[in-house]
Image (cartoon, rainbow, N blue to C red):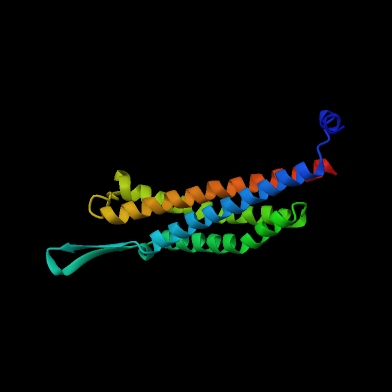
Length: 188
């Protein structure tokens, strides 16, 4: 009898809730990885500084993330997204226990999309500055500084990679929530 129900397209409720529970566990796992990526990016950028001596010990050139407002925005955006992801872990755990919850999934889609915009905005703006640091712009006489500030450039580039990885993970979270919602609406 069960095989006949499956042939007609009707799966058992335990199979449906098992798949939804699996998706909720995957959601929790991706959120934890996204926390690591965004928090790591914020810490890497926030602790980036390099000092170069110039002629004497008393004259030095210093590069810090706080010298550029774009990098400050990047750190704040990644910190906000990290805090949001930590707070959203509670709802993710709730979805593991109650796989049929719809209102909280809709709220997560909305807030995940807002955090995606914030994170992508910060990472994109910082990527433009890092590109200028690496390549410069001859038309405006901005010379590349990464030959002198090698450590500074490597840390900022690495933090961008983590932030863009966090963006991709949040996109996956939005897709997972949307798929879970669509599966629930098809079943009712």
